[in-house]
Image (spheres, rainbow, N blue to C red):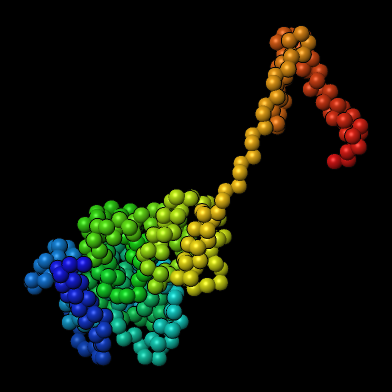
Length: 337
């Protein structure tokens, strides 16, 4: 990453870290009005694209706003998933919030129209929202008027600034944005990645089946190279999903499941292929009754054609006589099956 990219990431991470780590010790006064994203005046932020820089600026200024307490059931989930499993270590978070309260607010946006009773949609902080719902208590949140595009950018920026999301989780998020119609530059800026990295992410998602990705999990620490090895192997030696899932180690953590699966499919790809059984040759056609009946035999069936009325009458007779012929054959060969 060049100097410009490093400055971009340093500024972004500083803003988000300040937002996420600020502790709201007390809440006084009325909540101030929600604000929409507006371009940031700083030089560093101006180097970012308009939409991304504006969202990052708004997120950074949210720490100066009051935190609201919102009934957790009034907050809907986002249609864009940035985690494979929000239940991971959720019990520990629930215990922490039960004992110490929710120290770090989540970010939600107003919905233009209520959705199943929800007035807001979570932008980020899904695990904290899940913990609040489990504890049946309000969730502490910053509230914005982001539209969906701004919310998606904010979600991606927050992902780029924290270390918890893995390569495959970010890749799935990128693919969801692509399916939703977001262009490459927006996806790259949202996730703070370059074009080659986006291409690698999407190539993995398009080859490795979603059921396999979900079964593996986030695979923290495994890195993109392991996922790319799996992608290349499955691309060169395609396997049915059931076979891939069966090859995965069952009792292991997520990263170990991924590595074990890569080893299994790689070994299978390198194994010598069993020689194919030669196809049985068809029996040459036979003629019966001076050529009026023609019999064609393959390993699995017999075809008998009649060329005139008398031959076709014989075929009718043969059809009605087949049960008796079969019974006589069984009796002669001593078969009870």
